[in-house]
Image (tube, rainbow, N blue to C red; front, top):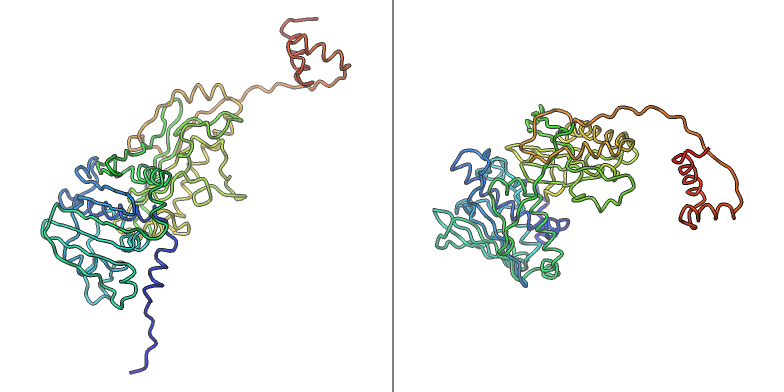
Length: 447
């Protein structure tokens, strides 16, 4: 037998690499994803499909953060003991063809678990010590992990102990927290950010009955709506990608009226929610995007985002039984912009956006008429909008062209100040004195 050159990963390198580019917030959401996948398996087992309005009724997850401790608890069915012993703690999902006959993990319908590293990555990133306790109707176990001790050992497995079964579900407790994590997760700004991310990015799960609590407070979902009426109809088209079998649905249109010309961007209600969203298996991956990860380009064939486009919202849904076919990254907070299934969808996303851009350009010349029409449109939940392939927007009849003339003449400064005083404002600009004088003469028909 020929000599071999060993090519095994060191634990230190492995742990540092899988945690290097993920935020604390994303780790928390990874753990929430695991709970949702557990609930999805239970729903599929009981009812056969997730395609129901209240599919997740009765399932919940609770996040608790207090001094030097993080805990996420759920009632989502738990991890079967055999799965925990054989592959739930693998770093990555096992391949039955190369792992000595290890069976493939049972995945949930429309799973949001992607590579099988979320729980382990979150533990290494957030905690110095971890305890995982999980119960099913058939049994229960607990796993205790001392991250530093495990990293220094030569064993890749974690110690598992069987215990008395409780309500089916999983509890993951991380305490004490890793360096610098405790200060971050206990700040009001961080907690508010996580709350908003859950309300937005898990909106479609929560609307189907799944409950998420932070402490004792329930997170309510952001309600995505588009406006119909007064000549406005959102685009709604769907198709199956021929190469991958991924189901793609695109919905786009007016979520709110555009801002007035010259208005301050921040004055528009919920402007932070405008832009494009990409959703994979009901999980929002990028939100309110206004850059070239979606349709907006800098110096390309499509315009970059401009505040006049505020009011536009587009949602591109990608669905598949195999999550590896979807255009998302391991953090599930970004997309693979070069994925062919995504590139093909972008062409249709651009078509939907173009109608809104054209409308906001034309709207500038018919502002009062446009505002009156926009008030006729009412908000409709996106799951109830009508199926129309392209955005419909009002069209304005071109105004008759009026020939214009510029007036340019000189007067003495004393005469100009005298006229300005007579018009009620001695500090009026020269230009405004001229305009107001002409208006006065016209309105009073002075010969």
